[in-house]
Length: 86
Image 1 (cartoon, helix red, strand yellow):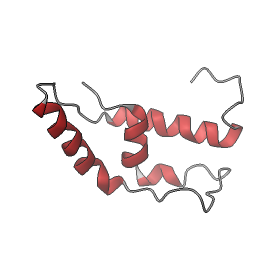
Image 2 (tube, rainbow, N blue to C red; image 1 turned 180 degrees about the horizontal axis):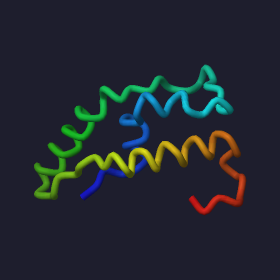
Image 3 (cartoon, rainbow, N blue to C red; image 1 turned 90 degrees about the vertical axis):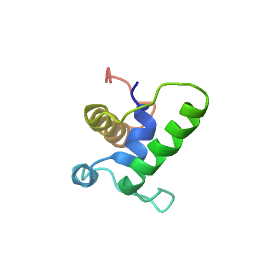
Image 4 (cartoon, rainbow, N blue to C red; image 1 turned 60 degrees about the vertical axis):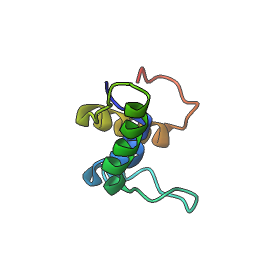
């Protein structure tokens, strides 16, 4: 199983992508990217899943990259903009 895109993007977005989009200016209300928390979060989630007899989740680098691209697109265009199939 693969960890959800939202969580992956929130904690595991590559640092190189965070500055790739110059048109999306961070605001004071935005959180601080913490890719160092990805592994501990996945470990905690998997601990809870294991305790309930569920399969472990894993991080997908390609899904994380796609989620980051989508988040950047929404940031540029706004969450209600249309025209993007992603």
